[in-house]
Each structure stands twice: as C-alpha cells, then as structure tokens.
Image (cartoon, rainbow, N blue to C red; front, side, top):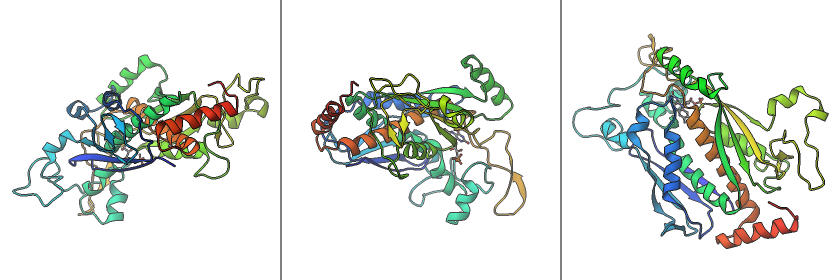
Length: 362
Ligand SMILES: Cc1cc2nc3c(=O)[nH]c(=O)nc-3n(C[C@H](O)[C@H](O)[C@H](O)COP(=O)(O)O)c2cc1C
C-alpha cells in the first residue's frame, strides 16, 4: 500500500490537476485547510501581482463524499483564474478568431536558468512557451494541495510538519528580508534563499536501509530536489557534519532511547529514529529577470535578451510551504507503507499496535 501522485497542467492553461491514489477510506478532509495552504503558498513579500489575481481554491472531482475519502483515487483541480487572459494563447484546441491576448506571440528567446532552451530542443518546439508552461513552478500549487491531504493523514498519527524561511538573499535576519527584496526589485534582479522543514511526532522506523527507493533520506532529497529552483538539500547538520569529528557528529542514545542532540535530523540508516525530522533546502535566485540576461533568438540565431515575463523577485516564503508539502507527502507515503490498511481505522490500529510493540511514547 503506497500513496501515489500524478499531476498535469500548464501555468496559464485552464487548470492544474492531481490524482492522489492510495489514501485509506474514512479520512476527513477540510477544504478550508487545503485552501489555507494554497493561500500560504501565494503570499510572501517577493511574489508577483499574479498571486493576488489568482487566489487558488481546490475543487474535488472524485474520491470524496461528504468530506470523507472513499478509498478510491482522489481527483483535485485548481483553476488558473488568469487563463481568461490567455484563452487564445493557451487554448487546448485550435483557437478561433484572430490571435489575441497573452501568449499569442511565439517566444524564441529562451531564459537562462529556465527549461526554455533544453525543453524546446528536446521536444522540437519553435515557441519556447510550449516548454516553459509545464516547467513553471505554478505546478507547485497542486503539490501543496496534495501535501495538505498528506498532512491530514499524518495528523491522525500525531505527526505535525512545518516549514519556515531561514535566509533570503544571504540574510538570516527576518528584519532584513523586506529591505533586501526591495533592493533586488529596484535593481530588477532576483534572490534565492534557504528554508527548513521540521516534522515532529514521527515514529521510529519509517523508510528502510539500503536502496534509494526505500531510504527515507534519499526519498526526502528526491522529493525536495523535485521542486523547481531547489539546488541543495541537507538532512540534519548535513554539510557541516563533514567538518567535525565523530565524537561531535552523532547523537548519543539515552536510557529512554531518546537523544539530547539531533544532528542526524531524525534519520539514521535511512530510517526515522523517533527524533524530529529536519531538512534544509537551498533555492537559487529566480531565473526570470526584469533586467534580462543575454540569450539567442532560436529562429534567427541573432543575440538578444531573454524573455521578460511577469515574475517574482523571490519566492523563498512560498518554497517553505511547498517544501513542507513535499516532506509531508513523503512521510505520509512512508507511513502508508509501514501501517497499510484500506480503512483509516486499520491504519490507525496498526500504528497503535506498533507503538505498543516497541514501547514508544509518542
Ligand atoms: C514557489 C516557486 C515560485 C517560483 N516562481 C518563479 C518566478 O516567479 N519566476 C521565475 O523565473 N522562476 C520561478 N521559480 C523557479 C523556476 O520555476 C525554476 O527555476 C525553473 O523552472 C527552472 O528549474 P530549476 O531551477 O529547477 O532548474 C519558482 C519556484 C518556486 C518553487
């Protein structure tokens, strides 16, 4: 028994969709809680006006009845409200009438740092929009919706997951984040940053030892690297552990099998060890600059400036929410593998029986 997620959707197409399979029947979902996370993803000081335009809301087309999961695949939809301005340019079918609105003019100047060039080459597109629309991080909206569903399941076994910003543009102090974002905006530049996600109440024994598909650290790294613009992931003290001695690197085990330190970030040997799971994620500066970088016109071969499209200055606050969703998803998936069950009560019963067997006070 495992959770699976499939998504589809272009940034300015009609909608984003997700199919979530492997949930137990009988899990209560709260529409407001999902929409709350969608709203958290859209807020943040460095976001573009598009975020205000859209106000994402989840729609459920299948798998839910009267707010409770049926055990069948859950189908989620988030409409792109901005699509009305792109209805000719992003029409799924051949559009009628003269070219009008956004997306009507082909884009031939790929943006460095985006999928534009390699995507157009790989798939044989003349208009890089055919690549960049799917490559866009707009897609993270449905991942946040799926993460909110995962969080609902995790809450049932007492696991809470939270993401927060540690740094923006190299500044660790919150008071400096607005100023540094304003300065980047004024310079028509962009910023990156670092976020941290902590999961509390995770039982020992999620994940396994030896393969990248089963080790939880490998799975978390893959889930987080799967987010656009993420360029580094560390578990616990991560890179810093490479610079200290063993006596300063590991977490000694107390009589109650708990630890006073958590340098391992709650994972040893690919398994959760019962301490909070801690991951940090590095995000590169966003690649669409209002002062465009040099590029080449794919049609004429002439040098030019990359496409300028409305874009965020930084999206580090948003990344904290997306990373929280990714960690929640991966932990929920590992919990489904460990505890199974078609009905929620089976899943919860297996969790309780396991904690009793290992005499673990959650
Ligand atoms: C929440 C979020 C919002 C983003 N917003 C933008 C944006 O407004 N402009 C932009 O150029 N890149 C944005 N990105 C990053 C790009 O989507 C990403 O850098 C690009 O698709 C290339 O992928 P890569 O950086 O993983 O190589 C965002 C990423 C995330 C996670």
